[in-house]
Length: 169
Image (cartoon, rainbow, N blue to C red; front, side):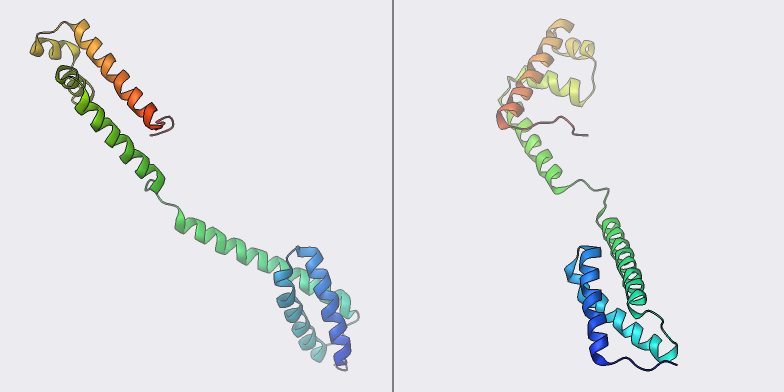
């Protein structure tokens, strides 16, 4: 068992550890906590065994405490990241989709009735151009032109509103 160090010696160790931790970790916010824990561990050890180099041991303990703190923070950060991950679309994506849907609806309401009907039947109901043409007494070419013009109208409406659907799933 070693003699207990004097309080001024512990202050010198604490000051050296503070400077060391600030320089080593680049985080002054943790320096006080690590210095205090380092000195507490040194006091416990010095009561039980002889310490040949108190400063060397202090720096070793503080290094281990810095590593432990980084591991703990990384583990907490990973847990938080896992909690925040979701299969749900982001709020921005939901709002953009609603806005695009509103623009589509307005544009469809403004289209001539025949063009709107052809576009809805082809794009939403997946009917063939031939079937649409037969029902509406139109040629396949006329049906294709209505679809093309309807798509152009929708694209222009989105562009004018500043909605970009590139990258949308």
